[in-house]
Length: 194
Image (cartoon, rainbow, N blue to C red; front, side, top):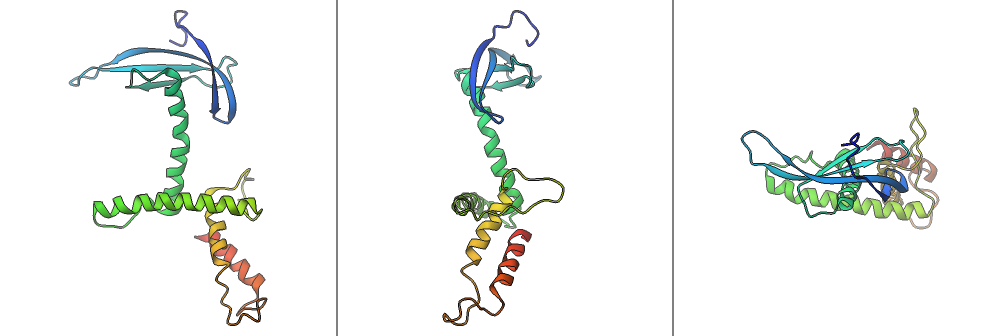
């Protein structure tokens, strides 16, 4: 279909397409039938996208919703990226899918809580970022362009730990059982280690 001269292409402007705020693309669509031995035939809507500039590789998308406009198939495909990133981050940093419960109901209860925790961390980290206090833990092998979710988790931990300073008296706010700069250094290191 990409090489056929019979394919009817039309121009569309996509928003938020892989780092482009707006990207001109060409789109073609039609329906097809999916055959699988021993299974019923499934009608599919196929959508092809190609970059008229030739910079991006063509993309083929399929949908079982034949009534869905081709542009919406593309929009739904593009939206999946933020969900995939959220799931990856919750698995890596909050323990989704590694819960140690014995019953399925327990997992069904904790997973939404962990996804909610993801949202709380993002909201608190945004507040910390607006105050200019979201520190990036630098990787030795590359320079980060933006803070990661790991940095956000560490920032929220530091924010919460600031309230815990082991003070024995309100009179001596600069001095605690250990000097405050050393305590902050410990908090920073521990926040990034977990």
